[in-house]
Image (cartoon, rainbow over the protein chains, first blue to last red):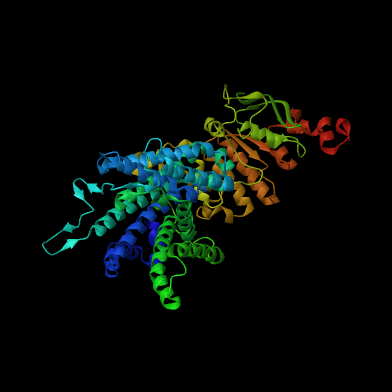
Length: 365
Length: 257
């Protein structure tokens, strides 16, 4: 949270307390403002929060531990499919949400370790290639495991997933407050996801400022020196992969429940790249960067899509560029501009690895 | 004299190059032990084998009475051997303070659960780690740069920081690989005082160094390596007069080409 606060332009450094409240208020009223533009915008905000969780998790692997992972979306898939298997009519199992969520996280963590072991000795480009392959393997499994035994239902995906149910409170139903006033389900999801993102931020910040966070940073900066001061780099890498995957798994399970439908096409390589772009765009290795990157890059294509289609129709009479194509185009453009203008990301803040309250002197970074 | 480290017939080969041949030496507790020799003599290779960066082809190290594990750097650090590097290897993007705190890793225990819940043990350990890191920075004389990102420190200060980071692992044997390289006379003199202080505080020091004045003024005993073999081991004064050593450094004698 502190990083996020100091990232607020102008106010962050002068009045951290005010900046903190500003962030909280914006986060709370955002869906109400979005609602004015139509319910689809609240939905987009909900997705933006899921992307934030993904970006936070990937930032842990790429930004903190320095392990370039191009198959991160696989963990999202594992979380989503775990939810689909255990809470849908597909196998006719309907386990409670509070059981499925940790299971999704656990399976994703396991997948993280499975990916981690074979790539322990790889770094840089080679690591990127293997993780990319891993992401594709998971997706192709999901695509083809419908024969001879139907497990994943193949390309049709799994439908009618149970909604998120918090101890009997079904988030997919509008909350009837009074006779005339009800809160739309999209808002319920928004605030629940917001809580999840806030929890993720707290956890990740705690990891960052700890012996584990410092060990990751050490490994990232110089692996040989990290070994020479007694860091067990093998365990620390596996820990980074599995913890990073855990966040992906949780986000995946939430995604499945929210959308009510999972299919392999949601977990393509392009999604992995999109999440990585968010991390790099925001500023690698710091929490605020991941949040801002995810928010901007999740919203931007939607905003532009909203503008681009009517614009193309009035200009050319037809839609020449499909919004999905446009999205990739804009992502690439954003990356190129970023590399040229601000190679360290939108928020190039240096992450802290020591507790401010333990430190003698502040500032002078 | 209590033996701290005993190297027995250490050998290391890289393809066709025999980098170390049957190197045996003993280091006593509390001494400063110099390892010298011409470029390419195998000094750094010896350090790398000792600290587990390389696995030796033959021989073994006995440290504090029991054998050191092979090729497991973190376990060797855990047993009490720390090192610095010839070409400084700091964690560039971390501050001086954080570098030293990272060095304390092996002496702390907090697990993921403790970190996520921030229980009392974790918070206390974190506080002590920070406190200790400040002490060590003051100890090596760069306390005022605690908040400076390490890549922005001056060369001499980076060397000091590397020593502080190594000391944070709480070693019994500190292996310094050319700590005075690139330092001016004043800095070297300060370094000498620092190493003497470290020895005084109970840490045995093993030193690779080219600066003859520093080696002669600082070391209790010196071993000379040449082409991967130990050709002499004695007090500095005697080593200086040793003919094989003179031949190795100045050419001539048995290694004339």
